Image 1 (tube, rainbow, N blue to C red):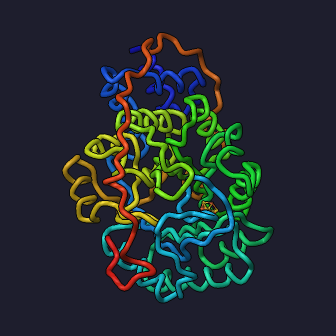
Image 2: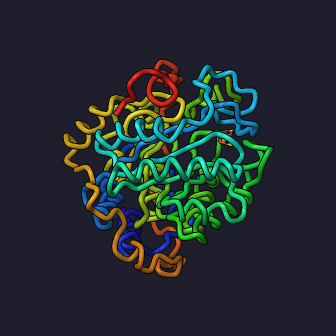
Length: 388
Ligand code: SF4
């Protein structure tokens, strides 16, 4: 297929596909899906080989958020029966992190619900980062604390944080439909603050919230312009008790097309399969490893993932290998000291779509797999051992 040959060539050169090409990936048929995965897999292997980076989430503070993000089980007014607790102490967070690291993770993601941290919260998280780094040589720590005020990113960097996560989540055009308590511009500003402070920026999206293909392409192009080092791709878990509880819009095939599109648009960036992996990709998870080079091990913030052991088995069975702490995730040109600028990634508009797939996706009707959604009842904030 001309489209896929063009996309592979561009991906190997880190050249930006046209919007039409990105849209055409989302419109491929089920008959073409394995060709799409194989093509995006070539780009993935060029920049990341067969390595899979494992990340481990520690929910430092769960629930009771004053913001109204409609996809979130921790939002204002959420009726989802999630764990609710206030800040974990540094030793509690370090203990949770240690379980993930023992399971094979190399990055710990410290997440707290809320609009953004107070300066006292930054102190608490700084103490936690120090506790984790003191006890685990070589660990990468990412903080995800919401919107940052001036100077907070610098303080987190000084405390030893390697990265900061703040997702754009959806396109600028639809942002106001999912959240009213802050804006898309607020989110962009925080990613830029993290970048400017020397933190590795991590910013991604949530698919499955009722958005169009154009919205998905918009947010992925916006992410490319922001130039994060990692892009988490979440697939909406429609939690009962949230406004999006009925939004079961994804099939495994749709998830694979979305991951392939992200890989083609951001070829040399860490693409991470995030929340909703087990719920929406289901038995197709191993195919997704040909597109993404990173996953979360174990559980998510408020929901349970498959057993950590099953993640490791899946990676091995699919012919991939867990990335070690001594290995550098990003290609040399993006690694610290390399040239990771937008210019280096290229922004050539390239040609138009060429002969695109020509057929729209023959989507199966998505099933509401509420049976696969399990609220987290173990790990941080409980007396039970974490899943790692
Ligand atoms: S996504 Fe973050 S800011 Fe939004 S409701 Fe959830 S915890 Fe609060």
